Length: 483
Image 1 (tube, rainbow, N blue to C red):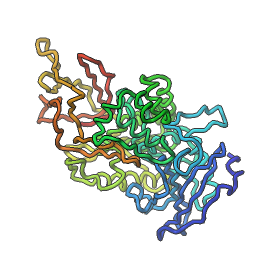
Image 2: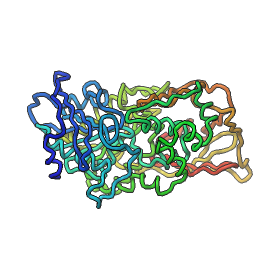
Image 3: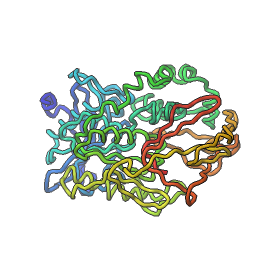
Image 4: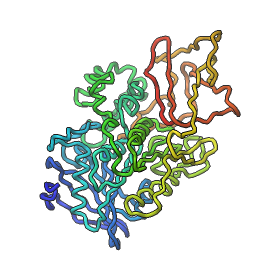
């Protein structure tokens, strides 16, 4: 990678500024192979007695306000001592270049081609050669889009990338993550997210002209109509939604599992049981890497969290559900920090379970030597008449169907109306759980019946099929679920 070294210090390294007693902050524009410069903020331990590894966090959401010692997410790592590098990805905020949503991997035979993996590779190469007192090892982590960027980097890694933790990454935007869940398009999320990301280089919040976004979407019309009236062809991803309604080559090219081989860096896959955005992606990433994991470098953690719920706060509850333990704090201090310390600093025994999951109900962490567990048994669970659910198959003489009314003009919202925008313009979900559904059609209620003790324990792969008199939805899949 001599072309990186040839840039010397053309990157305009700004004078470092002490921000805490332990870290010195500097800003830098790191050049990559096509000449684009990526804005990065570096926090370097001041007067550390020995060389330390890098922790790299790449994001499309802006890095200028980042500080590892003020972040619950990586504060445990900051206490241990690393060189933190926060980077705006290509085309976002203060980085040069053109942004492309979920950029497909490049043609690796084209030496001039770029993608998120090549940008990460070139960034690491520059850091190793230009930031003093590093030990030659790099770790990377991130949640959601940042988790997908971590997958990209680990799929074609720089040799110095020794540990990567993709947390709730989107692995397939049609089959299971973010924009579509099992092929079902998520209208409000898709609209608000792509306008947030593609209106300009920074995060943008679309201004709705009605107080209830449900009414706005109901009256806005089709996807092409929304494009003509509100977006004027300026949002590429919205046009992609309209032009690619099925799982065609466009979506398949963005299915990152097909690009994963043997896990070269150690991999810590993380997600939450109630991740409303990307529960599919981390399990697909784990299972794909696991098929080629001869060196036991690929492990999985699933906790009682919603999307990114482990990144801050104690994690002792989700809405009104309490877990009797600070699961978020435990993850960050007892799982994430020791894992990076071992792979980047050689500290600890390096004994990590294949899978660690939080079992709700009894509220305990459990470990497994394989996932799904070897002792798990495959059983069928049936929808029965009168809204019941049972392990017993329907009898031939029993009712063949249940019926209910679904009327978009008289909905059963899962959020209290008037429904506010989903995103706050910073990539943060604005959804808050509500205890009342308000008016609307009676909800479809499924009740468990025939379970010993009134409950059932499930682990491993869970899949379901739903049939209706008016449609047959694509087969649903919730891999690795525990209910």
